[in-house]
Image (cartoon, rainbow, N blue to C red; front, top):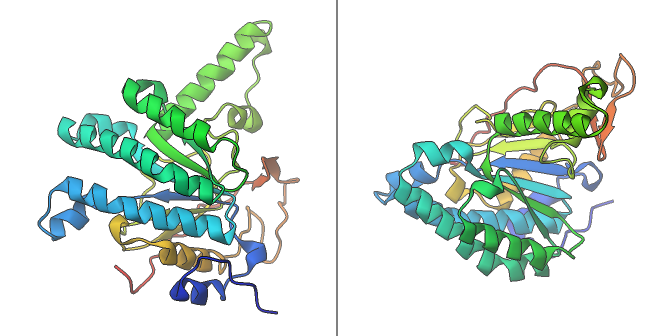
Length: 290
């Protein structure tokens, strides 16, 4: 029986969707949006032109993810390292672009029943940016569909440092450090992403084969899909192609082929996801686009 095509998909997206199993969609997709600068350089444009062009990619990807029923989408928008390694003029442009994006896109987010959240050290961002972020979050707070999380001023290592500090502080308030207990579940409960399931699929654009300090704890058992397309070239169609590749994989969680169970006891569950031991999933570099 052929799956019903979600409303709003274009013809090419619908063709890819027909190849998908709607019962096996990833619950949470994380995307490392890379290649804005290279996109601009190839066109002899300033770097900021690439960032501006990337906004259309965000819009297309977010809308397609929501239309096909993805529960959570997390976008790596601005790393903590960007503060240190990018010119101030570029950082200022990115902050202004973020504010414009939030103002322009909130109606679309509400139309698609998308709730907006953030991860990262938000308190270090400019006050005017924090104010706009809070406004956009509140404007979408009652939506019950996909959760769109923007990683802003984010670093996975910093997140882990903050998590361990939070664990120690909680122990100190609850009888002292003699009561300190640290295990996987306690770490997960203190991460920025504690309200989200761990990603099932991470997508990286621009062909780079690295995670760039993004969700290092949470991506331990995610499937990795790398596309040569630069971020301004990426669209909802590319997202669906990534999902199609994801559905070809056999997720073992440390077990054997054909056996989804973990050999050393039941899988850890947090917010509807599974964890277990095992090798890092292989990378796949698709051929064609880009």
